[in-house]
Length: 282
Image (cartoon, rainbow, N blue to C red; front, side):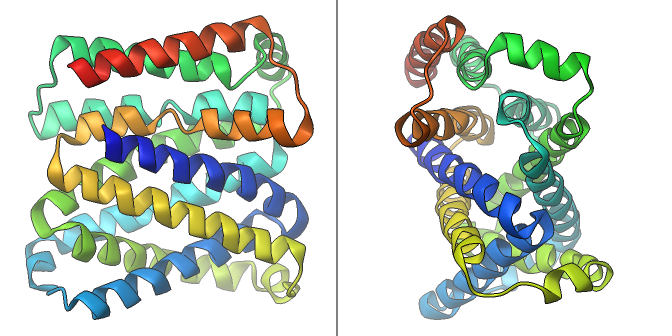
């Protein structure tokens, strides 16, 4: 659970900075800059630790699936953040945990305790409440805002990618598994780089790019702690506890942009705290 919460911190920061950078340099430039940094970082870690890649041999097919799912999820998620509003994107994005936990239970046969599952469910509902103004959410869905379908697609993609990354980390260790995942993801980005080469050619050092790299650094914290936690415990529990990441983005919005919380957000905070307590006890 602690690893999942650390992952939530990283991904919450990544969301906040990713939204800022995506609206300045575009979603493709933002996501590729951050994920290239992630791949370079894991390559350095792999070399520095002398970790063997031999355990990845039987799991190449999992790496290919994970790379494709992760690339799809990051591109659609950053596109949703670019289009906004976050009030619609965040609560839908947090639903990735439902997809990932369901896969862990169905495919890996994990059986979290009933108390843990109840706590996870309460926490996810709480996150959905905290990360949006319900009135704005209803308006967004009613008017079919352009960020909505991208957010749904990203939630499904992250659920599949998170489950696969946890499975790979279980089998090959988190360093080899995460390195393989990042490299496979970059391979899937190559065709996108060709398609969007004009947009990427306009990237220049500046605020937008530096914030994109900051988002990538925060994402590194998220994927490293998530992978390490999956190697040590149940994937379903790590997935569920990491789903509270929108809390970080909401907190930063309140502090930086002086946004005010509405009643459903306050209720959501109470549910998240209670859900996490149950998850920990379970």
